[in-house]
Image 1 (cartoon, rainbow, N blue to C red):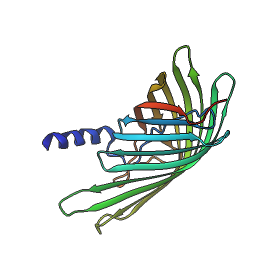
Image 2 (image 1 turned 180 degrees about the vertical axis):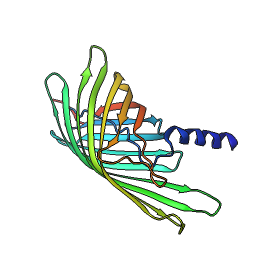
Image 3 (image 1 turned 120 degrees about the vertical axis):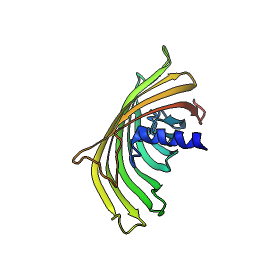
Image 4 (image 1 turned 45 degrees about the vertical axis):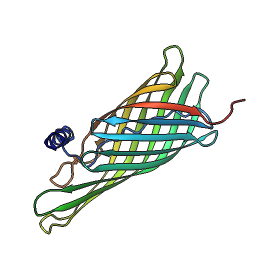
Length: 223
């Protein structure tokens, strides 16, 4: 039990117990209708995460993502997008979606319970190169922008509710190595546009790095 508590404390120190941190959502680079991408792994936030992306039509894709960590935080998001594949295997994508996150905490023996929620509608543009057969590498960039709307509720009369709203921009870069099963590495950074998010009630972590395994399937018969 002591070992588990020490691990949780060390992980908390890595992120400063941040309520919000950038999510390492997969950049799928959907190529065609029936293209299914599944990505799962862990990040130093610390969390485990999974992304499922699917080419629903010849131009439209859907995406679902979820993450959970050892400090009682979770994030869920869904998005719809448009994609285009070019003859040189370059792919561009444009997604619009909505994210929701929550962190639950118990601070002291008086059972001061807090519930920290945030809502994050966003758009994201991706560009990258898929299926580089010569070296079995995929790579690309993503740029996510949205409006972060947060609030804190507490059972203690001594801690007032707290709200924070701001535009947030999150660039990322990723690399995938392998054939059918690819190792995925993503570096992501987030920064608020108008304010510094730092207070006793709400914290914000700017950097996240994710490692994972990426699987791709074609769920339709090609002609």
